Length: 265
Image (cartoon, rainbow, N blue to C red; front, side):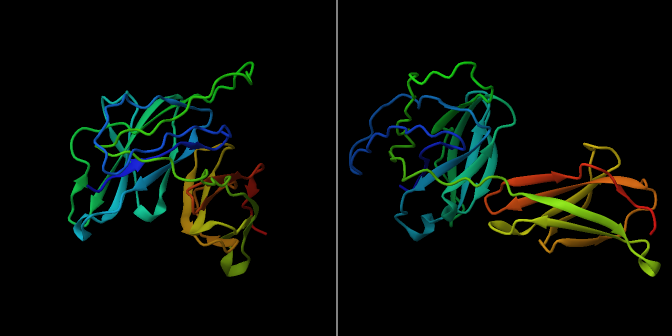
């Protein structure tokens, strides 16, 4: 039977090695085990790799992998994200501290979602971003064993996946045009190119520092320049925000520390 399984939590700032338990032989009968023990993460953002068994038929070949999350210990499950099977991991960001349960399902070429039936948590994570008062170097590290998914077991796969830091950049200027272009504003910026998505830039403005923010344009190429025709009703001084997205889904945010004057030159 073709299944996908979560394999190991890889937090951004967790360097402790976690023990793994080798899987039983493929033909071994299922063994009853308890649910996986929760893993502690000090980071709200972490990667969740998954492993896919080879399908026994072409019709069972996966076209989509789905990550489900429960914030109430399995009472309710929500579809968090979908991805291509070749991606081999999800990025998850917790909205707040708490215990999160995860399960994965797949959609095959025939349109069938697997596995069927109620969700079974393959991974449990307790997110606690509050810094500990006194780190204890002697504290034991909780190991994650292989969770049962259906009647198969999957071992953790390879070394930790790299999770890139948020992309960086800065807003350089916002200047009004001359003559017939006096109704146009040219925004210029600088953003690192390595690892960015095809159209990584989103621009927004606010009349006060810190927002609320109003979208100027999204899905822009990283050309370093954008010409904007603003509404005449906006203030003569505005703050700008730039969001930069990379291929891994990380988003860097750059706000102008001072407002830009929109007065004619």
